[in-house]
Length: 127
Image (cartoon, rainbow, N blue to C red):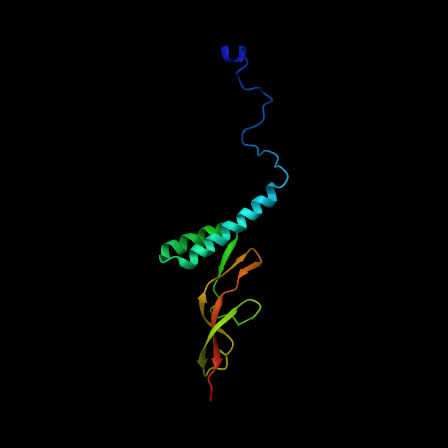
């Protein structure tokens, strides 16, 4: 009661501390820019990580914010979505043009391609 008498008690109409404040102009743009910078930093770290556990943790963290790893094994090669890094000869006409292996993992942020996977593609064996 003393706290109420001297004005230190919380007012009934005080704002809820769990409610977000109104963003200042430019906050959204700054947050999006910061997000992109952090994503690029994570991709840089992924490319240099020597531990599979670190790679897994970074990929999991990125996936939690909508950035997915792209591994293309078994997909039909598409130059709009893949970068050819090499070829593997095959005698099987069904495999020709199919991705044999992902050399460097690609990434997409939602539907936006950040980096195409670099892949090895099955190609018809030279006769």
